[in-house]
Image 1 (tube, rainbow, N blue to C red):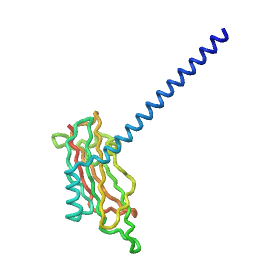
Image 2: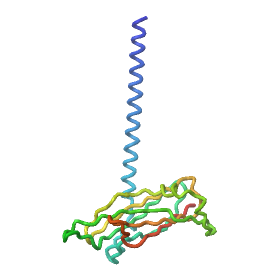
Image 3: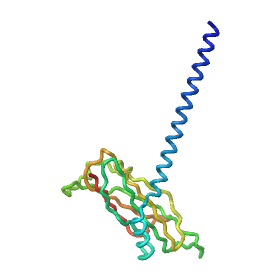
Image 4: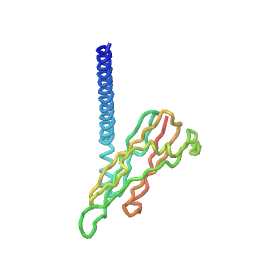
Length: 188
């Protein structure tokens, strides 16, 4: 009897260890998929957007540019907008150490297919969570530029209509840099 109980306990312990290893492995695999997906999104700016950003920032000297700012997105899908920042100042004490920039986005308005304002029917906080981007500060040296990806992830429960967002670039002292950029997401 005693040997049978010992063997049973050993087998139960072995089964628990195997199940724990399987769950740990699944968790690690899932984590790598999320991290890999984030890297794909970051590098997802297409060639047309990159070309247009280069043209607006370098050729025209715009401080902040958001080309191709209208997108038709189906429920449950996403879209990446490209935002470019050109530092036309930013020298501190005569040294080109760069200026610190932060991007801020916010949901402004929702209009339905008849162009009627229905912003009050949706919680703004939830809509702002659709936006995924690097909200940390970026240091850009004088006369250099950077491109950021703004991912809009539309949930399957989104109302049909045009969602209007603002994107602002803020300096480290709190002042706005360049013009406010609007971008539009048409949810179908």
